[in-house]
Amino acid sequence: MKVKVISRSTDEFTRERSQDLQRVFRNFDPNLRTQEKATEYVRALNAAKLEKIFARPFIGAMDGHIDTVSCMAKNPNHLKGIFSGSMDGDIRLWDLATRRTVSQFSGHQGAVRGLTASTDGRVLVSCGTDCTVRLWRVPVATVMESEESSHNSSEPLAVYVWKNAFWAVDHQWDGNLFATAGAQVDIWDHDRSQPVNSFEWGKDTVVSARFNPGEPNVLATSASDRSITIYDLRMSSPARRVVMRTKTNSISWNPMEPMNFTAANEDCNCYSYDARKLDEAKCVHQDHVSAVMDIDYSPTGREFVTGSYDRTVRIFQYNGGHSREIYHTKRMQRVFCVKFSCDASYVISGSDDTNLRLWKAKASEQLGVLLPRERKKHEYLEAVKNRYKHLPEVKRIVRHRHLPKPIYKAASLRRIMADAARRKEDRRRAHSAPGSRPKEAFRKKRILQEVE
Image (cartoon, rainbow, N blue to C red):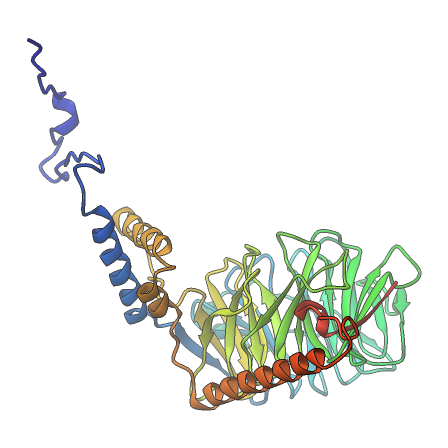
């Protein structure tokens, strides 16, 4: 007869110190744990409810501007610094950790329409409706040092006067050139007072410009004639162009997939495109109930944030048709600019009520230093919730958001109008000759033509 003996090494279950945790041995054989799925489901349900309880996304407001915040820029070399420009010509550098002004740059006589920082983070480029481009030296002083000295920064490094007002500016991710958008697209060098190159396709105002993060010479712009144009600085003419039914207010490239970009449109939607195939949108992101004014990708490339005229900020998955999060406050007015922080943990929004607001990218995320056991607990609850996210109860709790009444009513009205338009189109197709009214894909519906 064979006798099975339980033998354990003393080192495995004996504590070295009295403060250490006692080792607990578990047998994970599913035959011995018949209630495992039921237990995990309850844990997923509780995790979803706790996420709602702890969802406090708003961190604080940064006030100091006396007019609408019209544009923002991140500094690639300083994690907690953010630049903001307002409609009265005031430019400020903020410290996100203390939510206070580090420095002010005074000089513009009109609205500041564009801000961008150089590749090395030492030079700030600003442009506005006063037809000037100004280059500023970025201070590296902390808040305490700047309080002892004057808040106002020194004179600009250079001022370039041009014949047209500017609407946007963007710097190459790797290089010395920056592009301004206005009556045409101008390419500037830091050391030249005249543009080194100019591009023009049509006679309409260009309202936004963004350089590609992977290929420094590729530039995407949107204009008031409803077009999105891709330029290559190595060529003498624009490369490709797509014309939509409504105007695109802003563009953002995906930093992890540099061939893809997302356009924030006037028709309340965002459209993700592959730059190599512009005749069809890869994904349509819908939920806003008014024009989308600005968009910015997370450094991870998995999410982007949008700010809208409907006074809300939304966060979308890069391939999700609907937003995963909506942020709003009673005091916040129309949102004109949004940015993800350089570590993808926070979202900054600038609005019509002269304030910048700081939000958590994950509404229920615990701030501060997490102990290893706390981090493991959060990861486990997230995994359990993700495993059971398709079940009705968990799905309902995770998806639910409290909306302001005007937005709730506007969203339901938009759904009624969309359903009515779809029924009308179906009836027209049913009463037309077969094949005379082919079905048009939703992702192609808003595109008028593509020009090469």
